[in-house]
Structure formats: C-alpha cells, structure tokens
Amino acid sequence: MVQKLDMLKETASQTAGPYVHIGLTPNWCGIGGVYPEDLGRVMVGPKAKGERIAVAGRVLDGSGTPLKDALIEIWQADAAGLHNSPLERRGVADPHFTGWGRQPTDGATGEFRFETIKPGRVPYKDGRLQAPHITFWIVARGINIGLHTRMYFADEEAANAECPVLARVEHKVRVPTLIAPRAEGGAGPVYTFDIRLQGEKETVFFDI
Amino acid sequence: MADRDTNAIRDMGSFYQRDRAWHPPAFTPQYKTSVLRSPQHALLSLEGTVSEMTGPRFGHGLLGPLDNDLIRNFAKDSEPIGQRIVVHGRVLDENARPVSGALLEFWQANAGGRYRHKKEAYLAPLDPNFGGCGRTVTDDDGRYWFRTIKPGAYPWPNGVNDWRPAHIHFSIFGHAFTQRLITQMYFEGDPMIWQCPIVSTIPDRAAVEQLIAALDRNNTLPMDALAYKFDIVLRGRRSTAFENRMEGN
Ligand SMILES: [Fe+2]
Image 1: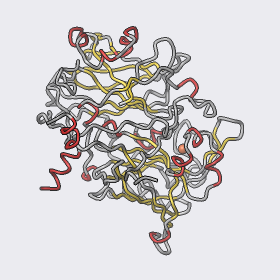
Image 2: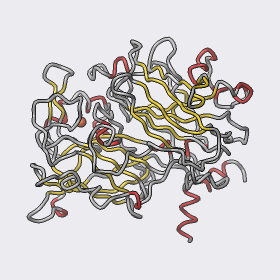
Image 3: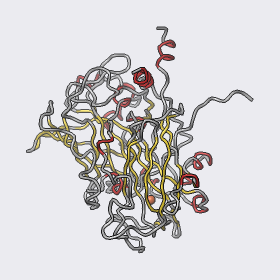
Image 4: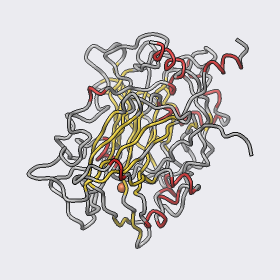
C-alpha cells in the first residue's frame, strides 16, 4: 500500500440526448416564460468592434445526413484577440462582445448559424501566434461526450500556414476539414463550416 | 484579497489530461445512435491554449427567483404532479476544491416520464404545470440546490423494449471551456440503472456509481420534499508554482 493521492475523478459524461433544447434553449423549443431569453443567442452588441460575420453549417453523420437535434456552442476571442473571461490575463476584452454563442441545429434542415465577429489572433503557449479560429463544442443524441473542434478562416492563408495548432495535424490531407470558406452574402460575409462526424472527410476533433 | 490571488494563481495552470477510459467512448453499439455519430479517427491531443483555458462566466445576476424551482417556474394554475424533491450538492474540481460561479442547467421528464418537446412521442401525458428546465449558479463553496419533482422512467426507441431509468440531465460550465460537461444524474436504489444501454456506455462501474445521487434524509424538507445529494467533479489544473519550477524558473 502507498499513500493516497487526494484526487477526485472527473464526473463521467453522458449523452445530451434528443431533448437537450429543453435545458439549454427552452425558448427555441417552445418553453416560454421560464427565462427571458436563451443564453448565448446574441453574442455581438451594437458597439462591438470588429468585422461582423456569420458562421453557418451542418453537422453530418457517417451517412452524410445532417443532425437535426444537435446543439453547438462556440467560444472565441474578440477582434483584438482577447477573451471576455475572468481568466484572460493579457488585457481587457471588448465588453460589447461575449465571445460565447449557443445555437441548435435546425429541426428541419439541420443548419446552424452564429452571428459573430471575426476574431483576432491568440498566442500559443510558446508565444507564437495561432491563426484566427473559433472553438466549437458539439453535443447531441448519440454523442457520448462533447466533441471539441476548431474553425479556421480560408481567407487567412498566411496565418493558417504558420499556426502551431494546425501544424500539429499529422495527416495534412485532414487540415481542410477545419477551414471554412468565405462567401459574400447580402447581409455580410458568411463562413460555411460543415462538421463531419465520420467518413472520408471526418473533421479533426481535439482532446484538449 | 489573498484569497483572490490564490484563486488567480490556481486558475492559470494547465489542465490534467482527461481520463478517456473513465468516460464513455464515442462508439458504443448497444446505444445505436452512436454508431453513425462517433468519430473514428484518434482525437488530436492538444495541451490547452488560452483559447480553451478561458471561458465565459455567468453571474448570479443572470438568475430569476424561480430559476432553480422547477415546481413553480412553469406552473400555471397549480403545481406539477409528482414526488417533490430537492437536489443539492457541490461542484468541485479534481483537486477537491470548490468551483464557485459554475452555471448548472438541468432538464428532465415529468413524473410520468414525458418530456415537453415537439419531437417527443411517448404516450404519457404532459403536465400543464411542468416545463422541465431549471438553472442555478454555485456559491463560493461550490454549492447549489434546486427543487423539482422526481422524473419518471420512460421507454425509448433503441431495442424494442429499452427503458431509461429516472434521471435528470445536467449541463455544467466551470471556469474554462475545457471543463465543459454534460451528464445525467440517477437516483439511489433504482434497479433500472443497470439495465440501461446509455448508462452502460460508461465502462467503469465506479464511474457510473459517481452519477447516482444519494437519498439524503438529513436534508429532506419535513412534510415537503425528499432530498438527494449529487456532487459533480470538473477537470482540475496544475499549480503554476509547480509548472514554473519544472521549467526552471
Ligand atoms: Fe432523458
């Protein structure tokens, strides 16, 4: 016998199930009057700095069918590369931008959409700059533990080429699964980010 | 102030590696929906960067007075039918330190096992006085509590005769986005826990037992509600004092 380490085990994950919206976006699924609005629905205030963009896409299963019951959260830096978090030590983030969004995939089409701003660059732990990116977390029925990935911007070629995290992807053929193309829409630029859970173009997911 | 400094330092170390053998794997064929929704490539291991080691914070100011009272937050003309319960506990990290300011959101079926959701097809009736969602934020000691009714078990399409044990879904926001967690709480003494294809996605029996709330007679509200105690553990971080020494500073 040896002395015990006074450590606890992390509570095990369980699937969010098909009714995750009751808990996380109740107004969206018709349970009105409990909360004034769903958390994470609006990320950008009228005075927020930076380029307004939309990020849209789908989450596809191994048969290529979009998930109509998934829930996605995103977390990102502001236009200056700072996070609106008490744990941000490098400066004070734009108070008009939350940096955190939560959206369900549409019950009919499977599409999700975030109205946000394009983030600035954030340093890697050794001080090199990462390319601009948005952190994604995906839960749904059939997903036993939330999936972490990142979305990068196709129009940031130079930054992407030197990003220390993208450099960690061993099979370079998989890097494009993390990069969203940009289109100029009537309401502003839209980046399309389809997340593939399985199959030939399976998205790179992270253990962070 | 000293306390705040300690917290600040504690909050800067990198996170302990997640024990993936303790959590359910992605591919669990007994839970059929996981088959086409499970990534097949290895996850890319990434020591947290500032992008994941930060996270949004939700203050107590967010909360309405009935947010942690599922008996009253949707009630129309009377209160929902069912066994009245209080669920309480603490949110801790792997170092057994309280996580204050954690946002907890819960959702559940009503006493008959029916969810208020347009895609729900179970024949048990809706309860007009029960919505099924609630939320709260932990206090300085990591404590939380909420009041609700005990959810019923329900059948679900997986095998032809699979049932979920009574459970409450929990979503937990710690301080960092890496700590993000969704799980389910079960009830002490329920034999159906051990027959459930979703519970059995968890390989280790001890990890399942950690999801079972204990009946807590000492905290029952006399003549009102039974109590269940459910503690939650989020990922912990290294002490930066250690890390700096390791790096030779
Ligand atoms: Fe459920």
